[in-house]
Length: 210
Ligand SMILES: Cc1cc2nc3c(=O)[nH]c(=O)nc-3n(C[C@H](O)[C@H](O)[C@H](O)COP(=O)(O)O)c2cc1C
Image (cartoon, rainbow, N blue to C red):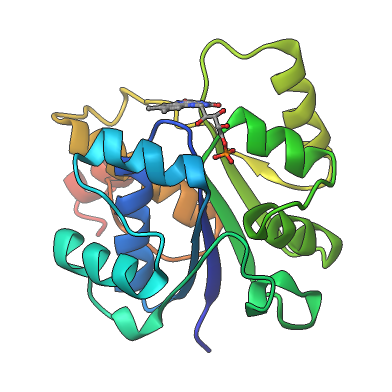
């Protein structure tokens, strides 16, 4: 069965992680419901150096061209006030949602049940339907308010996964770092992936056990 995942992209820094995640989800055969906040579109331009469109059809074409995406029939993009999209209702809630990157503003809204746009409404639906929510909060340092909001979500079973670098994987490039974080997100979404050599795997290979 095709896995359906909502990807929410907000106005926090981290667009290259979000785009790599989108490409991997589609490459894995997932159906992706994508929604940007207004600030997400602004931050996207700052970090990627090209503009998206507020029009979902044009936005999809830009993403396909720039990111050379595959399996694009599985990509559905909505404006952030599209209350008629399937992700706005619990009656058709997909398996999982990831907010990547997640701004502190959106984190605060989701932790407090404020669903005043499609992205936060979709997250609220995922929570009430007890589905899998993953947030990738990006800020540094965190204030006590941010940490409180993360604790609230963690207590609800949300996976709180800040995009933290690991050096035990010996990253050689920014792309290595991005793929490591994307891999950890995919793990939380239960999407199989082999984006980096996992702990213990190298030893197994060296010993001829794989
Ligand atoms: C280039 C840029 C980078 C930003 N980075 C962050 C960030 O890392 N974390 C954050 O919480 N807000 C960040 N902001 C501020 C948010 O975009 C702002 O708080 C906005 O209201 C978030 O709205 P949203 O949650 O609806 O996307 C950034 C803004 C810009 C323009």
